[in-house]
Image 1 (tube, rainbow, N blue to C red):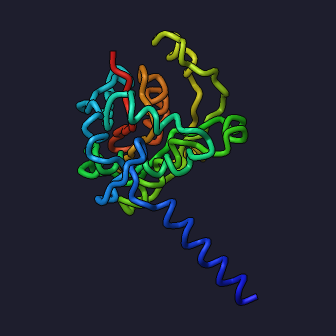
Image 2 (cartoon, rainbow, N blue to C red):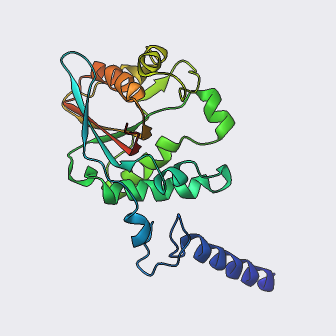
Length: 222
């Protein structure tokens, strides 16, 4: 029993070292700095400035992002499911370190939800996993404030207007939550046209927060 316990501890220790070993998450190059991406890969990221989108005629929302939706960010976002949970943590760390989110005042972190059927099929919500990392780094609570009431099709091949139409009334605020005076941070993995973020923010405004800022890992630029 003692021998088996010792073997288990050694195996666990080895696997732990493999998981947290200082290798670049994209090119797998050893990196003594223990960063998510090595410096050459960081330099490959095309950074983007913050972007504003119109939520309603009277409300606008600032969207922060690390960079453009292209490698190496795209490769991490599209990682195979077997390694996606680790990649999600790495994406969250990148978002915290390389966007301006740490300098923004917020009280709660709100991930974009998946429809329950898609969550059951996939087994995780990428936005939620990324939001958990931000919650850990910022010491602020994550709230699953939104519920997705409709399952939408994948929107990859839809034009901007069609995407917005498909996203209408997809979200509801859970339990009629009152966020009066609170600053909310809305989290997703990728922004393409902004349709998902707009609809989520439009619903969140019903909770009367003081402000809503969105943050994504990557933004599609045209």
